[in-house]
Length: 100
Image 1 (cartoon, rainbow, N blue to C red):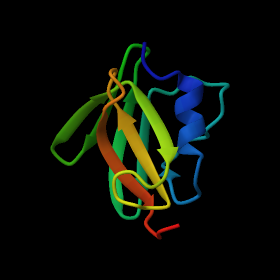
Image 2: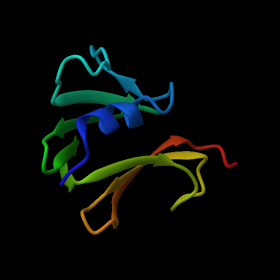
Image 3: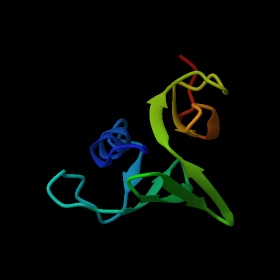
């Protein structure tokens, strides 16, 4: 089972540095496509119940969970960590690059 829609919205709200374009991040309306940017990195997330897809540039990454936490693997204060179903990190986008 992939990330719940409510959790995805919650993670995308973890920092003011994460911008979600033209989206009201409320739980009232189901939105599948999230156009985002953080630190001049633009990316898109397409949410599905079983898995979600991260798009940036020509890269496409399937993921099952998303966490907003720090230090791994770049010692940043805050990262978006995209996880595969076996909990391995498949992509990291730094949100707050300052070291704690």
